[in-house]
Length: 371
Ligand code: NDP
Ligand code: GDR
Image 1 (tube, rainbow, N blue to C red):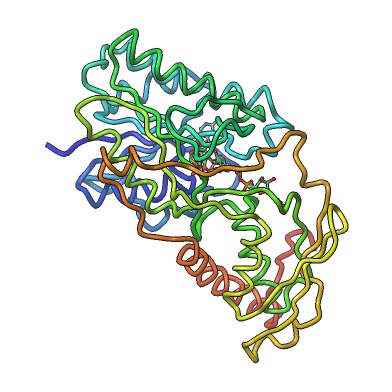
Image 2: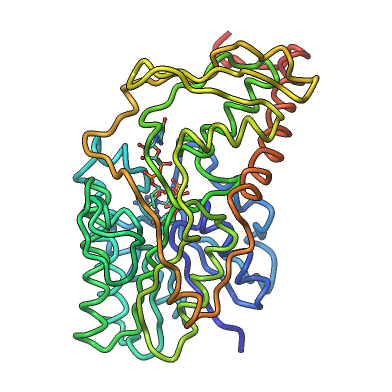
């Protein structure tokens, strides 16, 4: 009998990679997507199956984390062996603008699933994975951060995720549920949301290289993150639910890098060297040399500026994870380092932007429906 997985946030970065991964393993995958006024299934269109087809193994359901009724109904209908709760308002900066909604979706949303499992009598059958986050560590208490490091959340997002983390632990202890937290550090990919800093950088650098954009505006360049590849991280999610006992795991690379250096490394992919001058909001990045003739025109240009609008009311300055437990217990090992990640993202964004340039040069840039 094929195993059945239910994935929330199936249209997101991790939902797309995890769906692919589980389908390849022979799972029947159910995904929950939100209704939206425009199509929001770009990341999963390649595995989409026509609802009229027979014997589908990838099935989408409309739903929302803020609506208990649909959660209970979908869990009952699908009777999943495994639930991966990946849905969330996942942007830390935006959570300061929508704190109540974030608490409802990211915090109480998790409770709704745990209650659905309990009320439907699925406690023994259904295993639950919660997408916990390195943002829980927030203000630095110790480095590297492990499963034992105390939490100190620094945003409405992180506080909501703190509730989700603990309610998961609580239901495990109180009701003997198989509920686990994957405390994942930042993971990126070519399909990362465009407003997260890595993708913002790889998109902008590609556009700057092709002459589609002059400059990239960023916030805190000194923040340090432990960045991995989403493809590696969804494997850890799967492994976490395959253990004999439910437990919580840090998933990270153990290497941290400044945003400023991520910018340098991304330009270096094109053979361009970027030097930063000035401090605080005066800080700017200039291309000072290029080993690639194609990008010689960029030398001397100011390509990065700091814009305080991207600063957060409270910042997480330093994240660096200790993945020893995931490595020893799960046998998890990441395949991508930061250079390989940037190569993957830049390869993809350059292609995407070349397409944009081609359309623009051909006069097809924008379709104005109101003309
Ligand atoms: P994305 O932002 O790419 O995807 C989030 C998904 O959640 C989307 O499918 C989105 O739908 C869906 N969603 C948002 N709000 C709701 C809601 N109210 N009801 C139902 N669905 C909703 O995130 P990632 O894939 O990067 O991350 C997956 C999970 O892991 C998130 O919970 C995130 O907080 C967490 N996490 C991510 C890390 C990372 O570095 N990527 C690190 C640690 C944790 P739509 O497409 O319609 O917007
Ligand atoms: P983060 O990711 O907040 O760590 O949350 P993000 O890429 O948004 O920020 C990383 C760091 O870069 C700094 N930064 C900027 N960030 C954005 N988005 N835009 C900018 O212009 C910019 N300039 C500097 C930020 O201040 C921050 O320090 C991600 C999300 O995926 C969460 O859902 C997840 O839980 C954590 O990673 C782990």
